[in-house]
Length: 303
Image 1 (cartoon, rainbow, N blue to C red):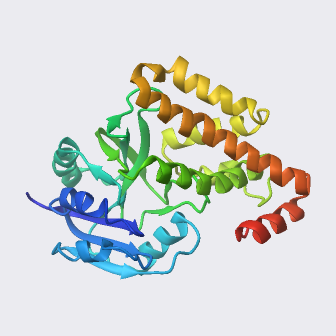
Image 2: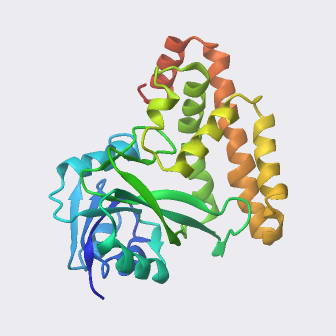
């Protein structure tokens, strides 16, 4: 396989279940792979060292994905024109690799970002109905983009130029068990609750216009929907979101696995987020300074 002028950045922590699959699919395409590891205690780094074009840097976790990724952009010695961002439990499909090889070298200068479709695979089943496709900017010209600084739902943000959408998918396919999946979403819930509180109360004083600057069109649409969602009544909005995904967008056609996916990720998780919002307001009301202190004291997150 001919390698393209592309480097991959992968953030890891205890990813021995996934890292080999990810690297086997990406290493033949890209010139360099940079793994930014948070001192994994498993065989993540040992496996990664088996691949010739992989470099491993260890860096303490700064509290969120965006800060870690931007640290990598500022610290790595990147020699390629393009960068692709991947998580360890993600991988490119063969047709996506072929499309990148074909299109990337001849892309017009005005295009500095590339959007790919994300395919969720849950319990080894592709969830075709309800949420697919989620379109994310994952490839960009080096120096032309950063990761926007958010606790959740962070996107690649262009500093200049335009984005273009490719036809094919990358897969988000975590093979850990359901307990891991649920625990992960418990951790996500507080950060998502803080995001929704910030939208409602403007705790940090950041405007929607500034946060949306140079995002992809799909990301901006998604962000605006999130702002509308934040204005809906607690708990009712979680049910409405599940109803839309499961019934209106035909999630029910995906069988038992589809029900679990939409119920856990679309209703249970969203209800848990609202429960966190409710809990914070119960202690702090809508006082911004009290909320900041409560979040810092209880979750060690500074706003």
